[in-house]
Image (cartoon, rainbow, N blue to C red; front, side, top):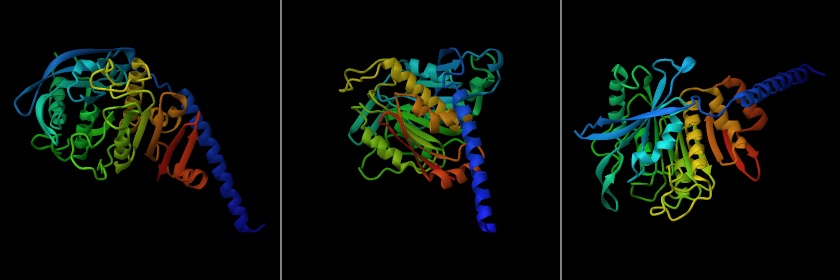
Length: 364
């Protein structure tokens, strides 16, 4: 046996030990992680948010009930929920309350305006990019006032976006930092605090003209799309194209079989959606909220358990989703994972569970 073969054997032994060690640690993490909300309950209150155009938006704000060890000050990030076109804020109460229980202050405004779209002018509840900065400014003020229900409980340096349908398109536009026609009314500067987004039943063709390829310049900001496969309003195929156009990881596409366009709202919409869901409404809402919150916790808040659930273990544990994801090295030792990823499993991992294909890529 020459020196080279001995060295190769030694290297393989080291890799084998690393694979076993990381495998055990990952299994233990997956087994120990509980994807349920961090807080037992959430409460809400109504308020009015000043707009940069001089108007006012009524809004509902949801927060977890803090107690005991979970009562740390200035710890809750802001989650702005951008409503779907013509959908009232009250229709998101179950979803917003569930996300809040994962440790977010969820703001759900009603934003009334007239939008000039490729098909003409529309007046009603229609979000726009400027709400991102307006809401951030308002929450900073609320956090500093002792009389506010959320006083001294918000991390105002961290803002994430949630959105439905048209609101999701607005969120995708805001993450890119440019002022997009129909989705933006004057000018827009992306705040430094904006650090992630998850959007349901949306794509970046909504509110936009043209049928070319979709490019989403997200500048490294984590972005996920959640899509019901029975969506008769926002085409799932356009959501797939939008996901493919997201330039930077981490990103995820979370498909929910049996959910339609209104799977995120308290009730199905029999008038505006022609396809009925086969997934129970409450199950769909919980699933969308859980995956949205855990994606944001894992990528933005660096919650390792949540990250592993979204990008590795969660899909196999949840029969209500099909997940495709691309992640940078997980919040573990990156050099070891790259070695294992490239040397042992390559750049594409495939998991099969009950005829389901899950695609994941390792980017080192």
